[in-house]
Length: 74
Image (cartoon, rainbow, N blue to C red):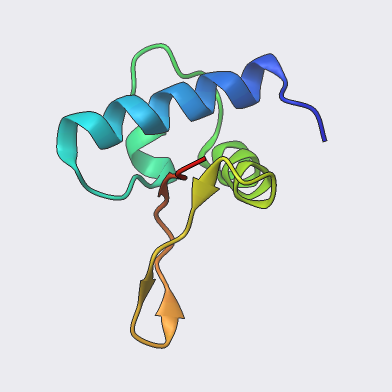
């Protein structure tokens, strides 16, 4: 998988929102940004691929992972 412009835009948004809120970021928060023109399903798919690529982490809360993600330490 390559880091496409769309993936970079989603990753930048996750990092920016995480810095501002110190909370894991969900696709809904990203789709509400004024410059984001993608559906929440597209954002979720990109976030899943960024997680598989090691750019994002999905925190665990109890036995189930949260749907929100945060930047990975690389």
